[in-house]
Image (cartoon, rainbow, N blue to C red; front, side):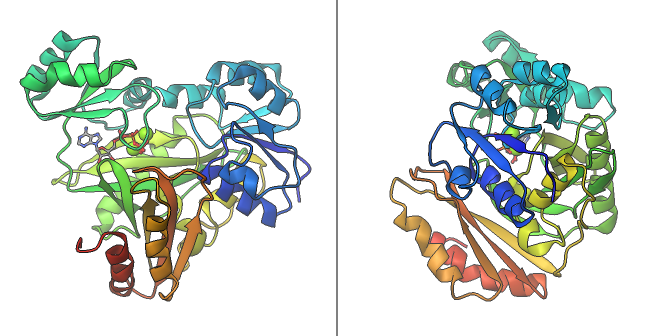
Length: 383
Ligand code: ATP
Ligand code: MG
Ligand code: MG
């Protein structure tokens, strides 16, 4: 349907689901990732994929030489080489090297958002334990110490409960540059996927609620069961935030809702996002398909939900044994409206995202009821 070839930096589950969407449209996608059998490469045998790290400049160059458009499924890539490729002008970079570079450093991301008037929790750069003690005096405790770079799934976050934990916290995150955030005593976490077509058109998906466990996304409830005015505000904050970043593609926007209805933006992902997996079964057009349409400058599909209610649950490894992950899946086989997605990852580890299950139904009550046996199979005895 489109002669332009797409190259993706990263071949994990997000790349895999992009390939699923692309293959239905006969789009040509090449993956750059180290494993020869990464989740995305496994399901696309028509293209010659590249074996190498998605932050290796030479390998990114090799990928660029084979495609018309470069995009990412992870922001922790070499943004410098993307900028050089963009300047040369032969290959388009989506969303853009500037956007990936700004977002991959969460401190710079916050500075950027603040300069555009987007509400964020107070934050300050942290050079050492002394600086963190100063931050503690200013923000109070608990506060969140965060790695500026290479953060994902809460790795890079440290909840500092009191001044006595300052040294331990700085030591624990010593591998990366740091900043601290004032604690946000949110009542709910929300997320919105926003997509921008290469021609500038912007659409957003419904507001969803995300529930995290140990800083890792556990459930996504779509649509969020919140006051309509709060949802409208969250959608507006998300759209305004994305308007401040140049480039085409899909973005995930994570937010906190405070008790007074105030919205704070937590962070942005310049790519498909875990909180948008539900769009595959629950929306007219999935986040993955719309990402492909957006970067290829094809008409965007409707972002509306086509079912009244949906919940997604992540399947995380509990140890090295994959059989634990199959238990909720076996249960899901018996549940109407449940779709299982396993990512084909060869190594199972505690806390690693190995798959997810999306349920759709006629009402949120029905979906919650159908989810129960699946959660029970995942964690017996835990509600
Ligand atoms: P992701 O996997 O989404 O990229 P991450 O590792 O970049 O996550 P964050 O999104 O910064 O980490 O934080 C993870 C979770 O920690 C948040 O979803 C939220 O539950 C909690 N959290 C983060 N910042 C704060 C804060 N300032 N106050 C309270 N809780 C917070
Ligand atoms: Mg993050
Ligand atoms: Mg996050």
